[in-house]
Length: 330
Image (cartoon, rainbow, N blue to C red; front, side):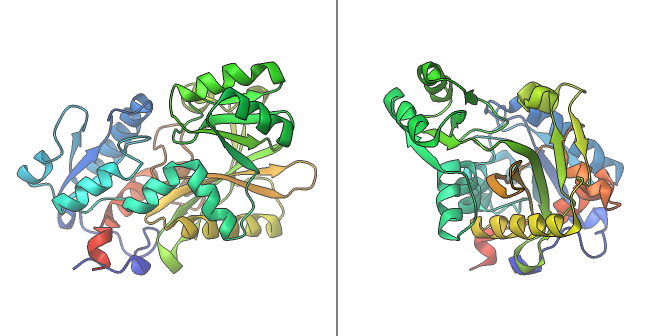
């Protein structure tokens, strides 16, 4: 029987004996635009688990059929996939059908979190602060959104990560280029009011009432441009952890992140991205990541280290929380 989601908290309790975890597949690579980053995440997780004595093996769903997991006797899966076909509920659904417990959020929460438009709609119904937005299906609708929200404006695919397809639109004549760049990655193009301020992120581990927020991280990218290259491949992006905030504001951001995470139904672990508006220090929710990066530049391991949790321990605790979410509610 699977434990109740409310009782799974990767940051709490004794670490499990490696043998009790069985044969583990570390899913990485995949077919998304974030394949390269996923391979780096998977390599890190694999090495960490093996260093703790776990019987862990690499598994790339782009090269092998998922049903091989059951045929080869895997007991659970650590999902280190990012983006489509890994973070969007598809692989989670396949693992539910195969009966193989997996890390992170379930099918529905993964699918919702991958879609920024649906995420923002849910947050809005919960009264949570998120920048004004519009779904654009044409260049004309991008221009209409810019007239409504003002410039600069963020234009991005609704269902991509790592700032892939993102444009900071600063002039009206960029509408067509911004739309086409985003549309290369998704039919749904999100136009979002641009928030000028500090870029923050909050890692969350656990599920339900026992989920807890790790220290807030501030991202200070060159020229304020935290794009794909600056996220994963450059060393001049600075990370401040814990972020330099008053205790009251840090506590507010932690509570906001937990509310945002729970509103989507996230489980296991994740990361909530926030902009802190410069003018009034008001926070605005951007998105939630249900399978965050685990590379050398990644933010969840950084936040874990700030509370004394090593990368290896973090991986082991996340793996220990693996479960069948649909079966857990049956």
